[in-house]
Amino acid sequence: GAVVSQHPSRVICKSGTSVKIECRSLDFQATTMFWYRQFPKQSLMLMATSNEGSKATYEQGVEKDKFLINHASLTLSTLTVTSAHPEDSSFYICSAIGPREGQPQHFGDGTRLSIL
Amino acid sequence: QKEVEQNSGPLSVPEGAIASLNCTYSDRVSQSFFWYRQYSGKSPELIMSIYSNGDKEDGRFTAQLNKASQYVSLLIRDSQPSDSATYLCAVEKNNAGNMLTFGGGTRLMVKP
Image (cartoon, rainbow over all chains, first blue to last red):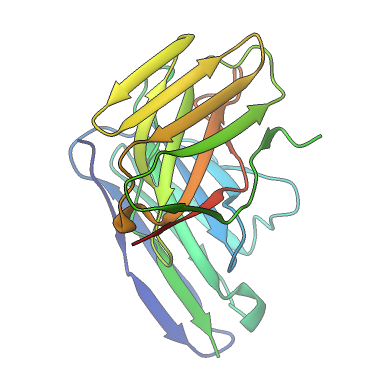
């Protein structure tokens, strides 16, 4: 099955630090990657949709200058949380999908971000 | 009305019983439907996809789709304690480039 690798799995850092999270599709070309955030006991919240070679599309209420997304190749997308603060602490999950309509999204293992 | 609705649970079933998880959606033209399982602290894992009305079986799992009623369900036969997790129903947004709308999830507890 499709494999999506996400790194790092856990980050603990001080307030004001910028954190980069990588999402890679290991065995297929991901034309689209999605970034989600999940707070405890809540469902997934889509933050942005990232298409290879173009600017990400952000959901309403998500600050694009704070959450920088780069999708430079068909197998790699990165999310950078700039100047992170304690309220940014959450579980960040990426997913990837190929070009055909109707395919399921395959998720990375997630990154647990804790800002002190 | 939420786009994808699920009962949050918890749904508690004894080991060996059938667990029935339900989901309704509002977008009449959705064509692709997925069930994901999410263990606590982990990311979602795809269990089933279904695209046509009727039943689709895969091992102990059966997905059921009724587009007229805008209803999709997941049955888990011979439930095991290891099935205890949150089950997320996801519906593809029409003409939205494979974007999914997720329900809030149903927490399933299988008691030994």
